[in-house]
Image (cartoon, rainbow, N blue to C red; front, side, top):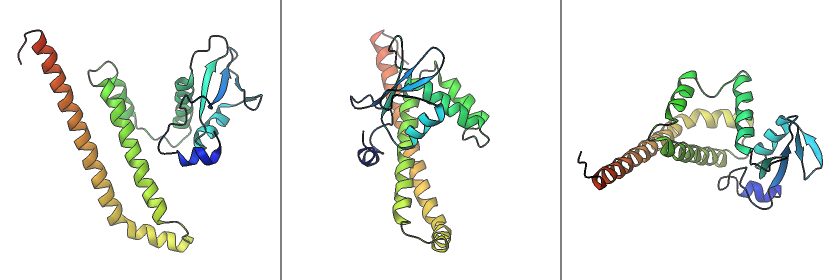
Length: 186
């Protein structure tokens, strides 16, 4: 995927969409990564650069062809988290772990994805408003943004809460339907 196409679709498609024109990276048993488009070995840091550049890619096991993209992305996150300025607190990580195997596990992934997308949209709006500012103007702009950011974040949090409540209601309805099918009333 060309950089211009990739940047145009930044908010719409994940960096690792399995499109036919996605870059293929093969992972060998010795843990080395081979980029088939550049015919060279690459590092995990270079894979991170692909993610940051919104390049479409897929990581495949060199022998079996199994898709290893998620595991490589998780490895990048692990390295970033260990790098000194973690994004997730221990409490957040513990909560995420607790959702595995929970009835809401499937909903949680969708919930997080939609929230991240909403946050990206807020970030894009802020960047759009701040184009062409000098460092001094940027500082002034940011000082004026506090009330606006509070409003945007308030809207974002309200949308997030509404989305979570809708998912919870949907789960309740599905549970009641399933129990009703077995003749069990709540």
